[in-house]
Length: 255
Image (cartoon, rainbow, N blue to C red; front, side, top):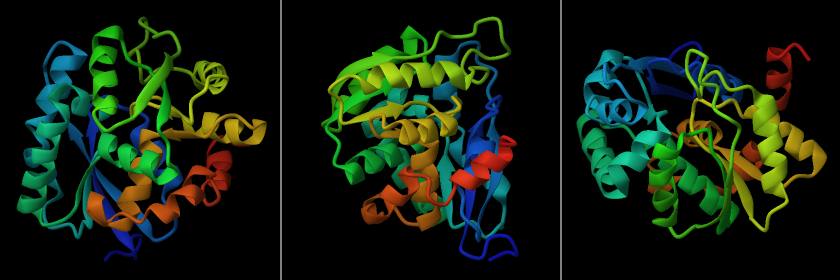
């Protein structure tokens, strides 16, 4: 392996303007686990078209890792999974694994695994998405047998550089509190561009409903360097409760 990746080295595919994936993954990864990142780039004019365009560039973008000794490839792009649907997503996973000979993990499918690890059935969605993406989001989760009983999210900051990536975590926490009052088993914080780690820790401290985010699920799966069907579900609870990453998050925020 390498000096900073004694256990695993994940090749991460991140949307071009996403400012959240790398800070959250660096916070989540335990010692001996590391990442290299490649940006997914598209000139398409809308979020939805860019997301679909990214999926057609997974292979080309991942080739930029060259001969780095990556132990898996992780697509940190949840919205793309909704738009192409579970069947096309599963085919992409097979194609990428066949080509690169390492596990290929999508943020959405690792989140499905995390929800299954928690035994969750009734889901409250904390969404940062515009309505044009939300309409694809709900059927995706339902296709895996989850019941969506509530959905809420902060207002999009349309004057910022990006309506999702510029979102402040105070709005995320407020939506989390509202969704925690529902009959859901878990609050699912969607997307890889919305900051979630502080809200997850605050929810743990305040006794809110369990929460999981897509970056949290992706990091958990990536450190195992296993295909989705081989993931060890027993390890997820320690990740969800922040036992190894709380102090790094607090240091990052200067707390």
